Length: 171
Image (cartoon, rainbow, N blue to C red):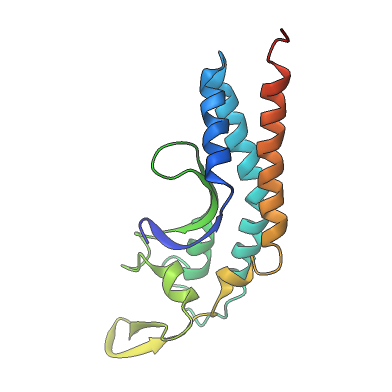
C-alpha cells in the first residue's frame, strides 16, 4: 500500500467522476469548481475519519508517558483524501504514515492488523516482545456506515453536475 496505513476507499464510478472532472475543466472557473467539489467530497467523509480517530483512541495504553503518544500520533494522521484526475480519482479516508513516531512509520497499519501485532523492545532494551493493538479499529469505523458515506460522496458529485448543467446556456 503506497503512502501509509489502511485506506477506506469509496468506489464511485470512475467514469462518472472522470466525466465530471473533464466538464469542470472546460468551465471558465474550473479551478474553483474543482476545489469546491473536492471540499464537498472531503466533508462527506469527515464523520468516518472522526469514527476512525475515536477507534484508535479507544485502544488500551500501557505507555510510560515518554515521547509522543502512539494513539494520538496515529489519530492526527487520519484524514479524508480526494483526488480528481491523474492515475487515481476518488475519495477515501486514509491513515497516513507516522515517520517521526519512534521509528514506527507503519503504526496505523500494524495496530489494525488481524493477527500478529508488532515487535518492540522492552523499555528500549532487550528482550523483544510482541505488542498487540486494538484489532480492526480502522475497518470497524466504516463497517456499518459505508453506504452512507458512499451516498454522501455521490450527492456531492451530483450537486456539482447539476450546477454545471444549470450553467449551460439553452439553445
